[in-house]
Image 1 (spheres, protein in one colour):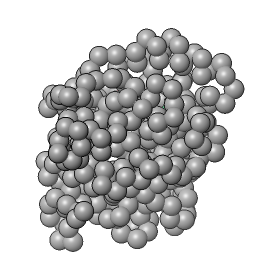
Image 2 (cartoon, protein in one colour; image 1 turned 30 degrees about the vertical axis):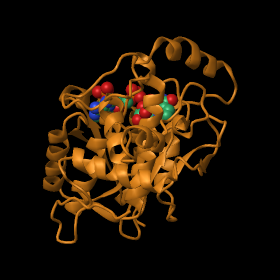
Image 3 (spheres, protein in one colour; image 1 turned 90 degrees about the vertical axis):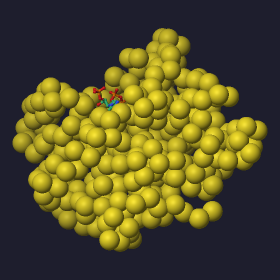
Image 4 (spheres, protein in one colour; image 1 turned 120 degrees about the horizontal axis):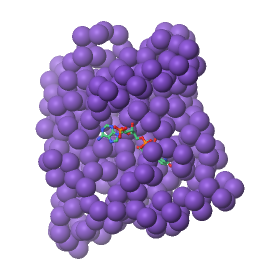
Amino acid sequence: MKSPTQRTALVTGASSGLGLEASAQFAEQGFDRVIITTRTAEKAKTTRSQLETRTGKKVFETLILDNHSLATAEAAVTQLADRGGQIDVLILNAGIAPTKDLRQSDDGLEATVSASLVGHHLLTMRLLEKDLLSANARIVIAGSEAARGDVPTFKPLDLDKVAAENFDGDLEAAIDAQMFMKAPLSYKPSNTYATTKMFVAWWAAELSRMLPQGMTVNAVSPGSTPDTNAINNAPFYMRKLMVPMFKLIPGMSHSVADGAGRYLEIALLEDGVTGQFLASKPGKMTGPLEEIKMDHIDNRAGQHALWNKTVELAGGVGYPTRDSAPTERRLAG
Ligand SMILES: NC(=O)c1ccc[n+]([C@@H]2O[C@H](COP(=O)([O-])OP(=O)(O)OC[C@H]3O[C@@H](n4cnc5c(N)ncnc54)[C@H](OP(=O)(O)O)[C@@H]3O)[C@@H](O)[C@H]2O)c1
């Protein structure tokens, strides 16, 4: 592996919270290029200035990415290709907490899944296609303990059951209903968020089976980190009850530095842990990261179906074929 001084990290959702902190930590680790994505040019400017002030380093480059707009992912990759160089660490951190009422992107996609998954997928596929990821690239996508299903009020949906009961067993149709909040499904803030984070873990597992040897991808939960902006738009019970309670109980939350540090822990691993959902131990919200082995996370059929649906939503852009043509790759089974 290259030494940190030759390494490049790209962090999405760098304007606040865990993304901002992780960007600073990569610079502090000695990375000589840290590409930060924000949704607006104004945020790019203030974020870069904040990071330069904190770290005393001039290693930050800005890029616009709004996961609600696939065009921004395409434009971001074009710019990266023009700038040259390869990315060693890709932190797909952008995401939102659930809001009280359903929010959707312009194309009707439920907002938590739109902010966390489809734009990140397109970005990653295009980076692979254009050979902009280094041979030992580490890809980390933000997961959450919520996906485990053992956090009070957060239950990922049983998509197999939804498919069996409503869609003749068609898992892709069930995933589509969840992503677009179509009947018979309805929006339940914490369960929707938990399901989105399960999708993220499924996406990482599926992608890990396609990546060339050397590259890794994992879904990593930063753990319960209340001092970010995530909670600002969350429903009342989360803002005023759950999070204040978590902050009072030892071990139920940790600092933004500890949360972001989990991304770096996995991104800097030299060994090839890949395709895993890494989070706090079942029943815990902080502490050491552990590979989460649960049947609903290890659902291979769900992983295939989620991948196929994500490819479709990204305009048919799947894992690049050998000749780099941006074609969909559907897996058997
Ligand atoms: N905090 C926790 O306890 C916790 C626990 C588990 C997982 N996570 C995950 O950690 C990640 C970071 O969250 P955070 O707690 O640091 O919250 P945060 O402070 O609100 O940061 C979220 C970041 O994502 C960006 N973002 C939101 N929607 C976006 C979109 N459509 N396209 C691109 N960027 C977008 C935000 O940009 P703007 O400034 O423009 O809004 C911001 O930079 C999320 O994926 C979250 O689900 C957090």
